[in-house]
Length: 114
Length: 118
Image 1: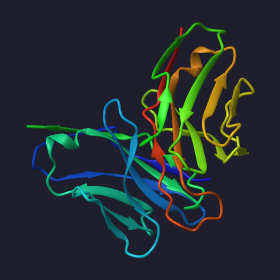
Image 2: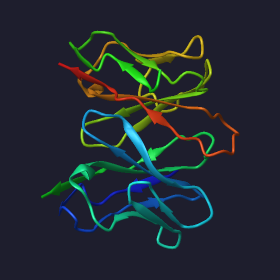
Image 3: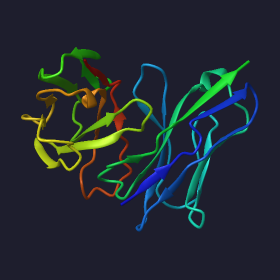
């Protein structure tokens, strides 16, 4: 079985500061990794995913995550955050890209203040 | 429609009542998932449909939970004799893909139905 740990329930940062949201996973088989973002009163939106190939993946709005197999991590980073990045971020794993049955972490609330 | 639509957005039920939550996926999406998200937790898998077939219901917490997708499009999650521990946000998600597809399928989530059981 797979599991996901997001140790930080809340991360407060100032606008334009860098941020890292941590995600560690546990699995006995190869997995695929995802970050989802949830804005208030909205559904989960896929931010980025790692399926294969380059271990560094990027989103269109400046976030990036690096798959580290030896440390079983998939931390999310952004060099300079905006107020609009305030949201809940969920890390998730799946065994099968086709099936997409996801196991989620408990989420990290990113609070960006001016 | 353009996205996954869920109704009602909010539902308050008295303990013991039956509730039905509806999900209208993106047109043409083969796969449909239901997840349960308790307060302060990440979503947890409940069940999965490929078209009208319910291929996995391993996450349904008890036999009071029942889901259907009779025509392979709209799905309904029914909870009988609701209990306080059923209070959560119920998320529906759909995707183009199905088991065995090696493509990168992206799940599109609805905004959820928030159930409060008093």
